[in-house]
Amino acid sequence: MTDPASIARPQLWILRHGETEWSKSGQYTGLTDLPLTVEGEQQAVEARKVLDAIDFDLVLTSPLRRARRTAELAGFPDAQREPLAVEWNYGDYEGISSDLIRKDNPDYLIWTHGVPNGEALADVAARADKIIARVLESGLDNVLVVAHGHFSRILTARWLELEPVEGRHFILGTAKVCTLGWDKKTPAIVRWGL
Image (cartoon, rainbow, N blue to C red; front, side):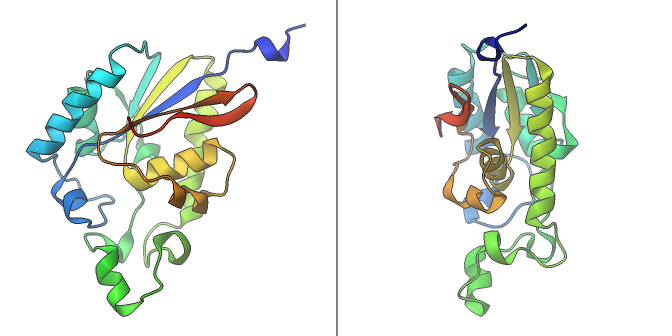
């Protein structure tokens, strides 16, 4: 019989895409397929320095070009496109900043109020859960997901077995690298925002 303590536990690495014009200005950027800025491309190149020493068994990327280009510049031009890793569909709030929304609704938080005519937080979490299940069942050691800000924060909350709303606590800058792993048998954050 296999000792459960000896079972390999994968690490899930997250790389948020580099800067875009909308991430720079604070506008919600869900499914709008924006390119990286020049600064965003440089950020992706810098992220490569953090990731170069890791032997990844699988690299997944959101199919949106800001994530694909980040993956390419970070050294993963052959990353598999993973439709589940797209950003939250912000519906009517696409391209709008939360500051502007708060002018009409001062208490607004995306985490609790959601987005009209967009994707529910629970649906974003369901996509994250499918990626986590794939990683946990893969038998692989290191998996990298190149994705988006809110999606990565929700992915982190779900890895930690928290409710998706708790993603609000994990601020993640553009082109930052995080590692999700284990404290013995407990899901944990190993590194955040390198």
